[in-house]
Length: 172
Image 1 (spheres, rainbow, N blue to C red):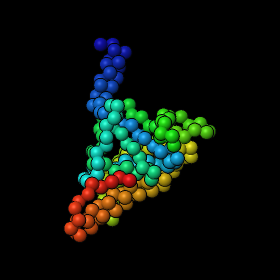
Image 2: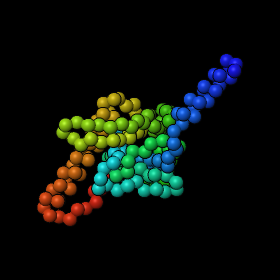
Image 3: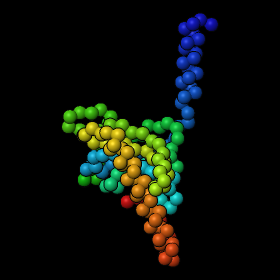
Image 4: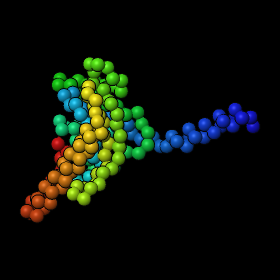
């Protein structure tokens, strides 16, 4: 086998091995006035699953940018979308390219966070807006998401202790 053929074969094998499985695409619906780090927290019992619409799992973020779901963190690849939901209900697709006057996706990442005083969370975040972001921006957003989960868990425990019927936890 020639050196060129062997190199092409090696790249083809690496490409096939790194593809992984496909998954249902996610659609992130961001309120148009939101500027910051939007966070989805996954695998939280008692929270609603993400709805599916038009072939997408829909992440409809509340005004604070923190969405909590019982769904597990997705694995695999897909062509996700991020859209602004404008005040009149129309949508505008957000891109990754910065321009001086447009909102865009700065970056996104996923991970997990665990501390002694807050519950462990798995999350995905998107930095959205016109301004630049620092690592402190997304660290604070993830901490706020963990605090929101913690408050919801404590509210549910208090309801149970008071003999109140369990209610479905809301992400808003």
